[in-house]
Image 1 (spheres, rainbow, N blue to C red):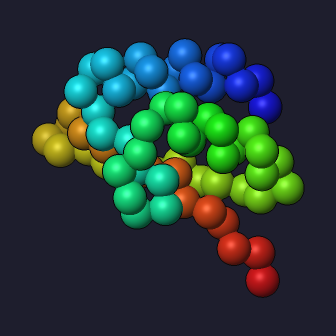
Image 2 (image 1 turned 30 degrees about the horizontal axis):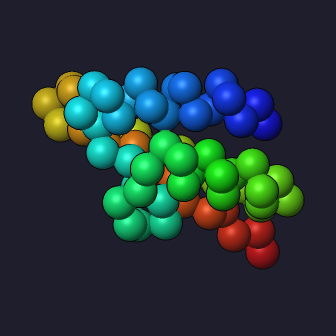
Amino acid sequence: MDRKALFIELKGIQGRGITIFLEGEKSTPETVTELLCIQEDSSYMRDYIFDKGVLKELHFDKVQNK
C-alpha cells in the first residue's frame, strides 16, 4: 500500500469535514495510515456513511476471515 497516497487521500477527506473511524473509534489520517501500512497481512474494509446523499463518515473495519 502506498503510504503517502493513502495519507494524502485521508487528509483531504478529513479536510472536507468527514469524520474518519478506525474499528468503531474516531481516528486520524495519521493513525489509519500507520495501522494499514504496518498490518499488511490484515484486511480492512472501507464503509462510506452518507446522510441525504452527502458523505459524512468513513469507517475502516478489520475483516475477519473464518
